Amino acid sequence: MKVCIYGAGAIGGWIGVHLARTGHEVSVVARGATLAALKKNGLQCIQTQAQFETDETHLKAPVKASADPADLGPQDLVIVSVKAPAMVDVAKGIAPLLAPNTMVLTAMNGVPWWFFEGFGESLQGTRLKTIDPEGLIGHAIPAHHVVGCVVHSSCSLDAPGVVRHHFGHGLIVGPATQNGPASERVQQLVSALKAAGFNASASAQIQKDVWYKLWGNMTVNPISAFTGATTDLILQDDLVRDFVSKIMLEAKAIGEKMGIPIAQTPEDRHAVTRKLGAFKTSMLQDVEAGKAVELDALVSVVRELGQLTQVSTPYTDALLGLSRLHARVHGLYPAE
Image: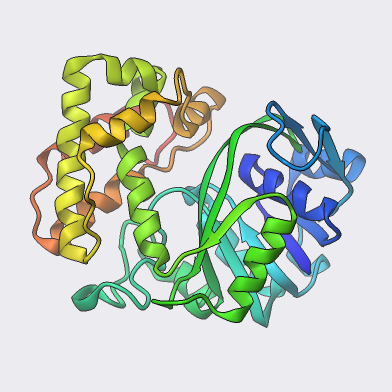
């Protein structure tokens, strides 16, 4: 396949280096220091655990890189792995990469702009104003191109173009507009990802997988961002853990209204999170690096969904207010 990584951050770089090493023609849209590093050294990945079919710990793969998508041309697969605040820029630049049958794999955190495409009963077709207020993203990347991807992995950047893979190699994929068995092209994508060493699987309804992951990280991500605490410390504090649980119960009620019931209790999910140990969330990493935080895709959108489903969200509102204020004070979220 011709594969383009749009956003060579931690997750995009991790996926890209493994696809390149299994024979796919990988290119990257990048700028600045990342572009220079990719042209000089290609994509690099340092593996801290031997989870792939190789004993190597420092993987390298040459890639074609450009700041202009037009230099790279139409692709079979475009992997969008930017933070949600950068999606408008992606939407403005992605057109040269799209052919009629191009798949756009969205390997991102939070609720995506395509969430209600082919899903949601009475909410089907609803445009989420906190995610795509003007409809720019949805117009630039029509839903028939989109294959959602839920990532179960922890990666960080050591330097531009150099990814450190900590643990996990799960990828759940599924088309935005389909409810049922995966199409032939999605099954082919799953096969390609498996061949590259990922624990890939096809979802019958990717929105459910997106929501379930959000249920676990919409709380600890922003709380870690404004406290600086790792997830173990967040859950050790009885008052904070209770606050987290109340937010999760609000989100659980919203999910039930949308047709995504969650059988677990918050305490069940806390037990899963505790197994990660002293884990530093992606949002805390962004704060420490002075990068914009993706509050809207993780928290603002849950408040909006509460309004759409008529579920009260006082605890989610409190979390959004605190985390938004912290981010604004530090210049990491737009001012009103």
